[in-house]
Image (tube, rainbow, N blue to C red; front, side, top):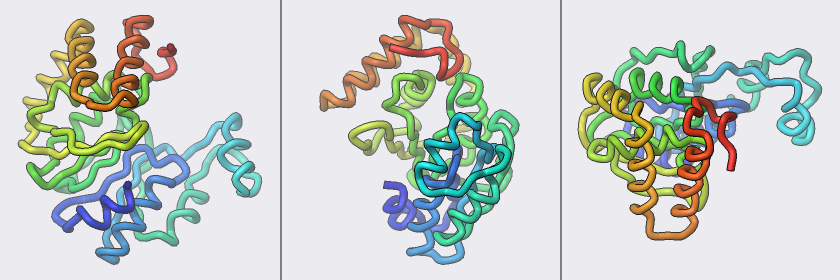
Length: 238
């Protein structure tokens, strides 16, 4: 999906951004597609570029990577993605990230693991989206531990129109109207009300024609009902 979108959708009118690159799987696919259609174009990758010891076996060693001393994986990330295209890294906590480099054409989001992170992404990146030009791809839209992604996107349905989705996890939105800072702040303010959030989750559920996606939306509702004060992904379970 990411390779196809970056190759076939991007026209060069704005930046291509990967929020939450981790080891670089999403970055590599975005860079690969972009390099096929527009060699020399850059993918902007945002992450801390670190890995906890508990994840090394599953994400590194089981996949053939050599032993990594320490937790810094920036060099490994660069080694992995450099063969696919040009990438600029932005290192740090997402809550500290800033975007001042102009319009955004493709925004892939896999970093909204909390209400705070989601609100920061909305404030920093949404105002740079271009009407009828920009795509926002939410990796975790169908994952029950991300109700804030569904609620805020559904609240902005007149600005972010659902245009496609994968069988699991991801959904793609087209920006149809400019998202000014004032509109973003209104969305943030109104989704602080838990009852509003539940109504938005129900609306998101009802928009899908297929059982698999409706079940994913229902799982958001169930998880939040069990943990209505949850602020982070790890606070939620079903």
